[in-house]
Image (cartoon, rainbow, N blue to C red; front, side, top):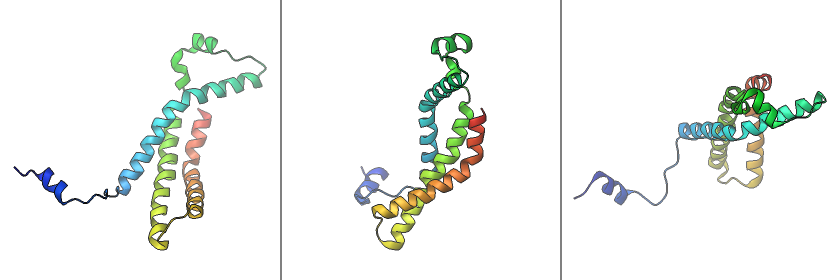
Length: 139
């Protein structure tokens, strides 16, 4: 019996189909947000340790947990995730888009072209996510 899947597999080539721009941007943003979920508690601890040192106090994780609870390491998470929605999506999504465009024009993308494209798209992403960076800093 010939199924639609077997017909598709028989006619498809070995080369994978390129991802759509929507999938590239969405997976970039999702990856940035998931990464921030892991990094945020460590960032929170580092900020609290630095603030305590600035005030001449000694930071103690045990005291922090006793006063605020274990979940206090996730304080301000929403601002950080919202920043990643803008920054990671723009940085990785624009990089892929510009790299593909440069490949169409030049026929190749060497290391120097990727460095320039990365610098330009990183700058654009930083510009786009600046308001969210301020919100993350203030939270």
